[in-house]
Every structure is written in structure tokens, then in C-alpha cells.
Image (cartoon, rainbow, N blue to C red; front, top):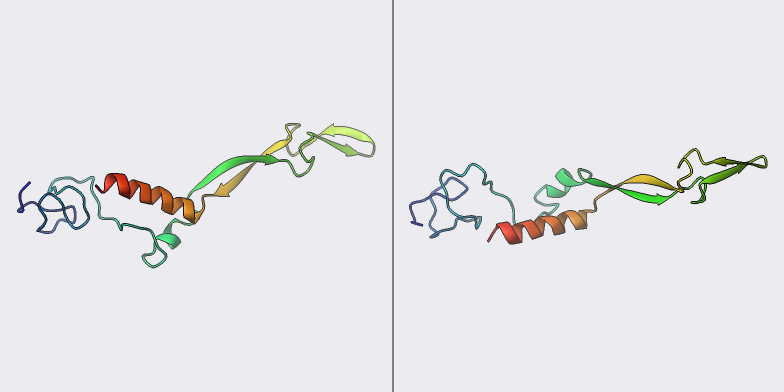
Length: 112
């Protein structure tokens, strides 16, 4: 590629083949955006991304302690919380450490 091409920042690029963001130089690639190399609280990424991603995990039901049944006045009934399964789904936020690791892996592979 020539030095006359523009990098993904859409500014003239001095670097043969790559721009300051290490993405291939292209003046017509609308799929390319400039992103920081790492996510930090200082660049606003932590405030932006915390709580945005979650996953569901199965955990032992707290009402029946995993038995699937509850005793009430000497009666044994199916647990109303887990419907006898012994497990309930819990929504858990993806940790900041995991978000940064995923982002770093994407930068590693896509930024080269």
C-alpha cells in the first residue's frame, strides 16, 4: 500500500500499510473504527461497559437447598421456587476483568 492512503482515522497516514491504530490503511472501509488498545477507567470504558454484559448460571435453590421439596407442617410439597428441580437461574454480571480480557484478545487478533 502506498503512503497516500488514509488510515481508519480518516486522516493522512505516514505509515506504510498501517495507520496509528494498527489497522490496515483504507479510505473506503466503513467497518473500521478507532478504538483504544486497552479498556481502562481513565478512558471511560469501565463506566460505559460495567453492567452491560451478563450471563445466566444455575445455582442451588436457596428455598429447598437443592432437594426440590419443602416441608410445611409435616407436608412435603414441591418447592415453589425451583418447581422441584433443585436449581434456579441467577443473572450474573460479567466481571470487569473478563470484559478486559475479551477486549484484549480482540485487539490482539484484529489489530495486527
